[in-house]
Image (cartoon, rainbow, N blue to C red; front, side):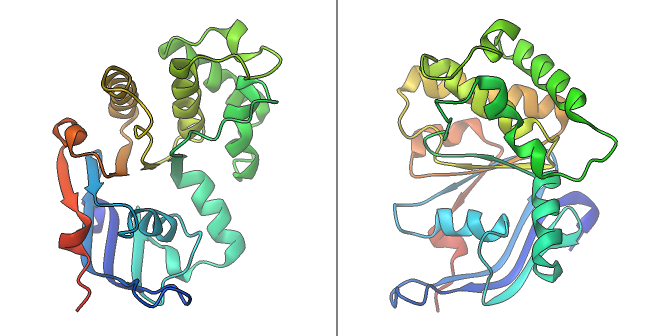
Length: 230
């Protein structure tokens, strides 16, 4: 294992849901290089989202190693894991999970409240949100509007990207974020995400069932290939 060149390294990972007898995630080895764009393809229920939850530390594996940017996630306490997650991982959800009753800027800043950057106060994150928003075509006026109810699909996408980037993560985990988008909006979303991640040297691990978007990624993995159930 070359930790220096890996953003994510998984070894001998085993996870089984207690109430799902027919579900088993067993990954002998998975390595994702720094500054890479990787897509993991598989059908619904195949374990893609479960793997993201394991990588993010939301659920614990029954066995195995999960190493992110040189840190073993499974050795951290719950408190330290929360801090590590906020400072190293960005998440883009399937339905983007924008809270309509909050302003766009408040949606974006939510992850910053969980990090331990003592020297980076609220002004730093607000300015970063504004600058990232400008890069993605979100005006300052739009970011500070009263709520997010009237945002277009494209604006919601951009807010979700900025929120995932706000804490300067090392890797972004994206759970089927293009599943509800038409082909034109899928391409726009991926172009925006890849452009800014390349500029900030952020890796991407996206899970999806959509084989049509695999052409946009550096590496394509199949869940059925890496999940050794026997």
